[in-house]
Length: 324
Image (cartoon, rainbow, N blue to C red; front, side, top):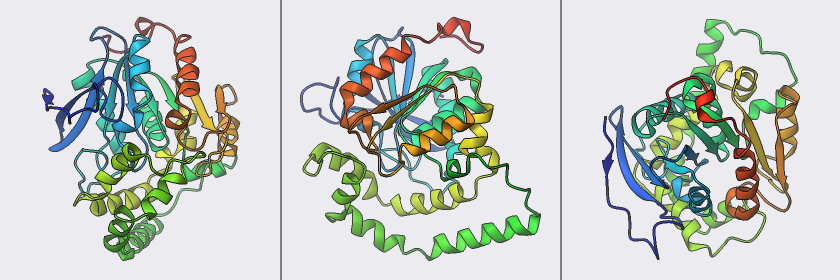
């Protein structure tokens, strides 16, 4: 299905940098509208930027232009439920987003790509690389969040009986339905609490950054935000073991770079050590002084580390799967 190009919102100066970077477009997937953008030469190798929780493709405002200037065709996608994409009550978990990414690579990018994900986007990129390896050249997770990584050294959980799975599903659904999200989400989205939440992801002061506030606030204030958040909370809590980060890491057959902020309070750098207990050979870059958003907070150091690693990747032709 062809992507339908929509005019981009008016940029402050040009569309090569800032939160409105790139040429914006919409693409229909399974009846849901998906927003995406692109920057760079058409025949350059593809790189897809996948945002984290509560953000959108605009969060790569300090990276896309640098990557494009380095010779990459840079795409940014808004995952279903986030950014300017649809906010349905589907089962929103990393399996569904990996399928969205698979279709995006097949129908829009039309070939394999390097996937660079921030936080939740890193988990989605990892999932896509495991489930659809022919479409993924390599993965960057900056960082890689998943509560199951705290148990990375333990053995696989015992198989639950059908009644146990039904009981868990019922309890999780009930608890998520009882959460007063209809009150909490608008309260946070329209008050200084949102700025405090954003600040928790950064080491340096960002309160007063209007572009950052706007790109987080817009999706949170849309009518479907509560519906999508509740659907995601249920689906992520009920994922099968095979969709958790430890299981995915064990199956991964593509290069993976980990980038972590030294001062990340949301996903502490100790989690990276848990990842490396599973895959000791994985390269890890820790950015001093950075919080949970190293790509935005210390963009120069992030871009340099990323480009240095990308330069070492094998050529796309050496990988199996469709070529560009």
